[in-house]
Structures are given as C-alpha cells and as structure tokens.
Amino acid sequence: MDEIRSGRAFPGLLEEMTVEEVRAFGPEVVVLPLGSTEPHGPHLPMGTDTYQVTRLCRLAVEQANRQGARVLLYPTLPITNNANFRAFPFSLRIGIRTLMAVIVDIVTQCKDDGVNKVVIVNGHGGNPATIQAALREISGMDDMPFVCLTSGIAPEGFVSPIEHPSDHGGESETSRMMWIRPDLVRKDKLANNPVGRLRVEALANAYFVRPWHRYVPVSAGGETRASSAEKGKAIVQAHADGLANLLLDMSQAPYDENFPYV
Ligand SMILES: [Zn+2]
Image (cartoon, rainbow, N blue to C red; front, side, top):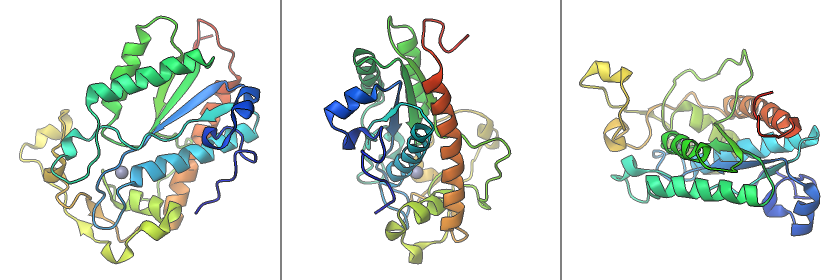
C-alpha cells in the first residue's frame, strides 16, 4: 500500500511498537494527527484528510527520528468536527466540545506518561478553531505539557505547483491523493466543480462558518483536471520536511518551566 516500514525499521510509530519498545524509546515529543471522514466530491474518497495527514506525519516523524529525534507518532483520529457538513450523508462528526475534551484528555495522558511536548498536526479545515480553544484551555491548567498546532510547514521559498487553488477537494487535495493512494482517485470524475459565490462580497474578509452544501454543492470545489501525483508528492514532501525540522528541534530542546522560551 505504501512505503511505510515496520515499527522496528521506523521507531516512533506507536501502532507498530511493543510496550517494551515504547518504554526503551523514551519519547520526547508526541505527534497527534487529526484527520476527518467526509465527502470530497465525486472523485476522492471520504478518508482523504485522514490519508493525507497520516502520510505527512509518517514522513516527518520518520525523517526526524532518523536524524536523532525521539518523536512518538500516535494513530490518526479519523472522526472530528463536521457540523457544517451535515447536509451530506456520512460526514462523520463529534461535537465541538467533545473534540475539545478529547484533545484535553489525550494531552493529559501525555503528561501522565512523561511527555512534556505535544504537536497536534491537523489535516481537516473544520478543526482549527476547536483545537485552538482546547490549547487555550490547556494553557490555563496546571502541570500540562506544552502543546502546539500545525498542519505541516513548507520550507521558506517553497513555491506551490498548484494552478487552481481550492478550499476543498480541488487540485491540491486531488494531487496529494494521486501520490498517496492513486488507487482511490476516480480519474474519470475529474472536473471543474462549482464553488458558491458570496452575495455580500465583504464577507470574504469576515469570519463565518460556511454551510458546506452551499459553498461546494458537489462536496468538492474548483478545477481538478490539472492534478498530478508529481504535484502532490512535491507538496506533501515539502510540508513533511518543514515538520520534520520542527520535530527535531522540539525533541532536542531541553524542557523546563520556561519552555518554549530560553
Ligand atoms: Zn480534505
């Protein structure tokens, strides 16, 4: 299915390690990936976000650990926030407050297990506000690990090869899936999918939660026919490189009460 190797060849992949191996590994950093299970148009699978964030994290953690980091990769959460996706069937979701509670619980256990640095890697656009609220809540609790949120970090100067930007199920996501799971991309369904236009143009500069069935009526928006596995590989690998650098630095930085400051 992919080039991910076994836990022994890839230390840090929790699902493939034994309890003795995890104890001996002595993780410095935990990576918690958040995916989603939701429609991605006629051409991409419901698990698109989960496949993407899992591959991103595996590449980054493997690279960081090969360079000497001790990063433990948790399994990807496949069901997160999708309140604004309700008009589509099987857009799997847990509540906003539930996801906050899940994050607080998982981070609390990291502390119990002796890990003081947690990196949440988010692969789903419906989640950041909730994750940020959970981080704010954690910051007000005693004796909690340091937690940060990222969705992958492109190195400085990286120029995206994407010609038709889209918020959902467009050229970027299609390209990434063409590289990660080409067997799941319905190439005969690639099209220029409609995107809703605002009645009040100034709302483009205001925050609101988009009713997804109005914004992307076929559950994916934008031109996808210029997608390619090469573009997808370039994007995922660039973001994995930047994430690997963050993880290596986080792993090697000593932890005390001043963290992340000197
Ligand atoms: Zn997606």
